[in-house]
Image (cartoon, rainbow, N blue to C red; front, top):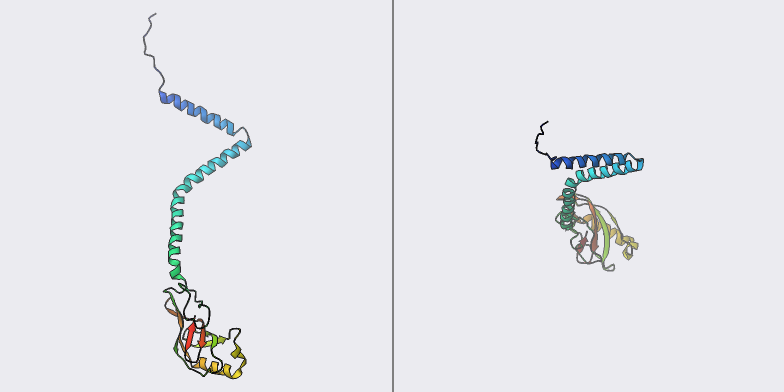
Length: 192
């Protein structure tokens, strides 16, 4: 019999790699089914991988958007504040620094009815003003000695009725609110 000289063929390199991958997958599949605990651990790891792969493309833009929103709000917040608290103490007209931005203006006295305050010195009243600038009510802060004198209280009420206010504005529209009025011998001061 005659012997044939055929070339010796070696398997392609990727074939051996594919066979190793198939064997590894089969070994992993058998290990997963070995116990319920191993199977549940594998399922948890697979779920984490899927969630990470889905969330990563959205997480960076979302976090960037939230951070940029917080920075912009922090920059603009002082201009958006509409806190109308007055600075403490009689005789100090004005408002806390930065507390009223361009969005709000305080109430102001348009015309005042003056009264005689010879003995009382200074009268302090918290006045409620409506959107048309009319006085709708008032309260007397604690510690006001003049509040015990009925004649002086009547005079103060008369002065309030004769006083016209320009209402406070909020976002460019008239707004009702409370303001503190200091009546003195020569002037009327208004604080938010």
